[in-house]
Image (tube, rainbow, N blue to C red):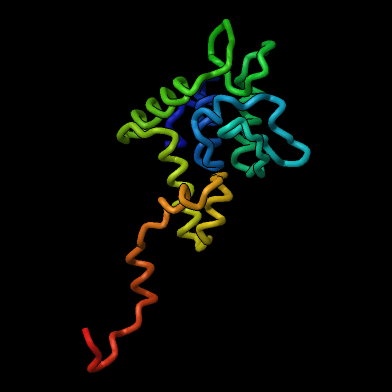
Length: 176
């Protein structure tokens, strides 16, 4: 899906940057739409994210994300006065909304031959990948910026393949 946008167009480079931000940082669609130019701290390699209840949290800026953003900002984002990071492809330029982010996700899914997925599916995929890499559940909650462990518990599904390697044989003659 990340390869779906047409990088020959400014809108395609913008859409790819949005998809990378969603997939690699686990942002919600509204959080991506709310990003401002000043939220990206290139010097410290961080990005400020406005989460639920207007909380601002700083996240590390992975290389893939910084490269996608830099490509969009230097060769695709029109010069204009709006401070929104992601803006419309045509004038009058204005910041994208959560609805726009959903539409971008839908187009990327269509181009990739996938059923339409929301930004939250990319968030879920990131959490699953982190868990499969061996990270504990509290660390997943920290990456997703959950305030409650109950929110993160959704990702604690049983991985039967991983458990099979840990299972001990049943003792001979023991109760079954």
